[in-house]
Image (cartoon, rainbow, N blue to C red):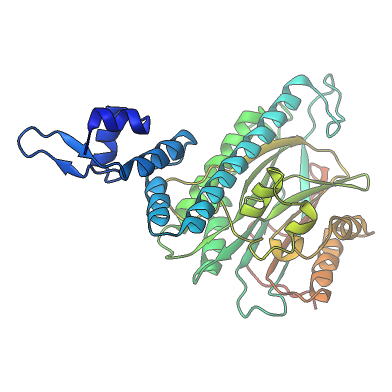
Length: 382
């Protein structure tokens, strides 16, 4: 038997950490002296203690540490390895999302970028969105669990999952629909990027609360809020947002999936990602939990002539970037482009529900699109 001091030296864990892990049931001693309260450990426990220490060094939460240790000690080393890999993929995804936000804020602070054409001395413009929604259940699914919202300032799509996925998607969008741009955009005063992002982030929290109580169900959410000439983006899951400017397509969001995290880490070739069976395994979603996931946030400057696409993975998983670029660049308004994209998804088999919002950026006062609040009715591409 090893005393707690000897065991601490062997495992490279402090006596304080060992007492804490004992209290949590992660690393109980083999024996506790009933008179002195001294803890004693066996040599066989050293390996578990080292595993606990290593997992904590990579930042793994204690509850997850216990699960990995349990898998390892039941001879499921492969399962333990998968759990560690999934956890680290999540860390990579979070880091990538924060890096994108940091880059977005740096670009915003230092001045115009390739996505910004308004000179700093120009008075801030105010734009609106002329949008169209296209929803389709696909050719395989019996139930439509995707939903969309479009208005002159706010766009969003949601992809529900689980037995109450349809309700989850609709509830999230209904809660988000109350989000409005910060005051001042209509008066053409400068709108602070942080105010726009905060408003949208609060809306995502409300959307997460709206999903609470739907057992085993949740939804993705991708939303864009226009204030003046700035477009704030909030994103959770694997739905996507794109921008077409002068014929060039730019993807604005990163999928919160295990596969995308592995691509970001260089472990999976991007060309192979779409064909993997675990392609849709989410790292983030709105599930009504007490701690809502942190959305990926970004802010862009837009101008008249830009065309936006928000869509669920029933569209983006089937169509290539070239397909999407051609569909958005077609002559006609947002309705024609949305219909063309959904029709192409059906031509490719339509295995999943689709929610698609196409919106053109126009000068304020000339928006003509679907009325604010359209979020649920299924519209077939046929």
